[in-house]
Image (tube, rainbow, N blue to C red; front, top):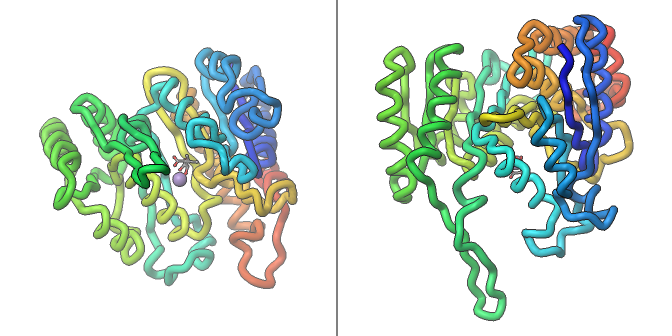
Length: 353
Ligand code: IPM
Ligand code: MN
């Protein structure tokens, strides 16, 4: 295959983990006989530093005409004082919306060998293998009106969903559950929010076309608690944008590190693949970042973005073999244990492909 892949390294540890993920991509290309045409573009703080808008036109144009997009991280505290529409993060919201990637898949699992890395008892974490399906282009992140009136001391954001927005992401979640353990937990706050009533009604309706999938509904607060007490009890978790943002960070922590989580944002055009961790400015430039989130995002790019399932699976298997051999980055090494750098960890993954 000859695929055009757009790289958006972005801010903080984004460039480091994307550089490592690209080395893995090249190794897969060599091993399976694929050719990648790579081009790198500015986004977020990296664009602002060059006096460009957070999402420059040519970055968006390149992304739209790519076969898949690999993004590092967006966010830079030196731009924190800017209004929301000019902050680095606005680029992420804009590119998701422009690409129409409404379904964000965030798998979280207990990697073999990392049972001790997280805050939970290994016996509680054992067997955890879930996917958060987060609605990504609607809800509070985009609803109008929005605004901050500092003189009046008021601010407003709007939580709005429409039937088609809920239907399409629900279908993605049911299809995914069908390929997995056939359990879907839909998460809402129906005891307070009208939007959740709409969400629950529509998910229930769509569920009638998937009689083989067991659908449950759960309030977000109770879901957050179950995620900490019994993460292995989940298979697919379907939820709206904001709840999905929060629950996926919690899922990362439960599994040992947010650095472990990859994601795929899918719509009708090219998919956007990115680690769930942010720009982590505190450790940027020190080769301390865990590249697993980015490397596993390459795995998802291959399988979910390009339909190269064998190649995607070989990336996952290589991460597993690396962890099994005892190599650990600092976030998962455990106190006082030797830690590999971002590059050393990736070297081990590449050697295992
Ligand atoms: C994420 C991030 C983003 C989000 C931020 C950086 C805008 O936290 O991808 O989870 O909230 O969606
Ligand atoms: Mn987040």
